[in-house]
Image (cartoon, rainbow, N blue to C red; front, top):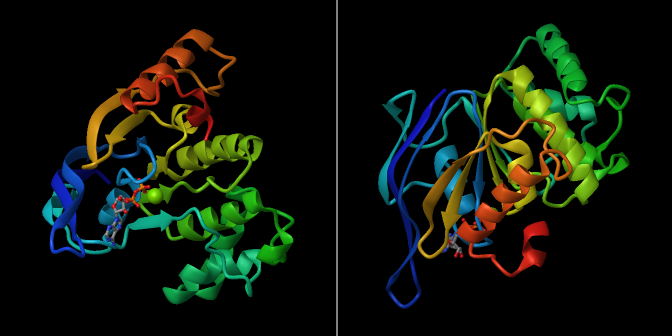
Length: 258
Ligand SMILES: Nc1ncnc2c1ncn2[C@@H]1O[C@H](COP(=O)(O)OP(=O)(O)O)[C@@H](O)[C@H]1O
Ligand SMILES: [Mg+2]
């Protein structure tokens, strides 16, 4: 499913009676099946943009269309995975993954089959009967991805889903996510403030500048996978550098690793 954002703005009233402009005139075409990253410094409006696409917030200007059809509010084929652990602690891995299907009233046999397939897809075979507290942070995020994907979303929105994980786990889970993305055929919109994560994962990187939040550049990423600093070092480095300049991080090497 294709998503068209046309002139999207989002403002909030401030206490003094003024308005705070979180996003201004964001126009963007999200292509069917692509892996798009939204990158920007903290507070630039990334989560707001994602929540607008998810229909969890309403824009104060502009329109959002799915396959050309304007839409307001949550769309049944659009799902979100958040950074914070969103698993149910009282349900097992299989119970968590099957929950959405249960809510939709899916036939128990069909449900069990889909849960089984999803457990394999997200790499949790052997952990079906564990509870979230018996899993690592990375495995809990696999559960969160599985319980969302099992509903077969056309668009998967992810808001810094690996932000709480260490760098190595993050890289490995990113590679897993790429495999899952290819197998599922979903369109992924992935919010991050990590330059390396954006370059590792996305085909296109939309750079958001703050105050007011707006898209300043969309970068095509055609580096060969798996993308690591050590492969294609020169082109990889050039892309990171371009992002750093666009984000105003020149001279501040620390922030590129966040
Ligand atoms: N409900 C709200 N009311 C007022 N301001 C908000 C609200 N939600 C977000 N903001 C402001 O909008 C800006 C963008 O926030 P957010 O989208 O969360 O940024 P990011 O995800 O890029 O860190 C921030 O300055 C934030 O304080
Ligand atoms: Mg955010």
